[in-house]
Length: 265
Image 1 (spheres, rainbow, N blue to C red):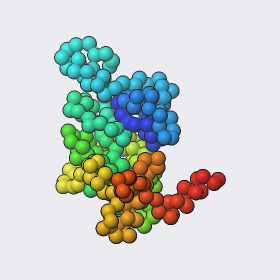
Image 2 (image 1 turned 90 degrees about the horizontal axis):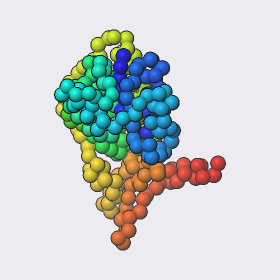
Image 3 (image 1 turned 90 degrees about the vertical axis):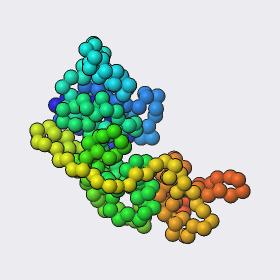
Image 4 (image 1 turned 45 degrees about the vertical axis):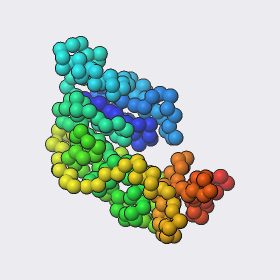
């Protein structure tokens, strides 16, 4: 089994790459963030690749290599007989030459249930909308964001009154790694991967999320509570309120207690 692995600097992404090595999948290239990008926690993905002797490439290099091979040139490195392209929290849209490259498929692992929460800011909208069930999804990549055929959606319970964007992200990463392992196991066993059309769904954008995070004087206490939790993901800015030309981040009492525990250990 030969694969290309693409992802960001996250502990869950590093764990997924380690699992491929454990399964003796031949990872021919890893597409990782620039080495100067320092993650909030865990190792850089490029460092994990280095530890296993796996070459790191940019997505631009991959496209150039595919193009050179298709035109009868001499590719800079070998991309023949790739079975899987695996995108785990990769931040760019994957282009058609790479989508069409693998024999089994180009798969993306999305940290939200599909087709309900496509695009950007899924955790924010999920918390704000009081979801009691969440999910993570494995799907085939097509030329749009998060719209390709589903392999599987793994669902789990969440607390609509207490969860925050941060706690939902932490729970989702655990589930996403479990789903990744399940799909990789199935592919390595030689079995066919499920493939189901998504159907209609919803997509969210960054401008929509930025608009939602703003607290309005007309918001009810419940709306303010949901916005505060929906955008709680330190060190990034949370829900905001504008007063006399200045913008302030809003924290409620339970979150302040959480901050206090971390300061006074």
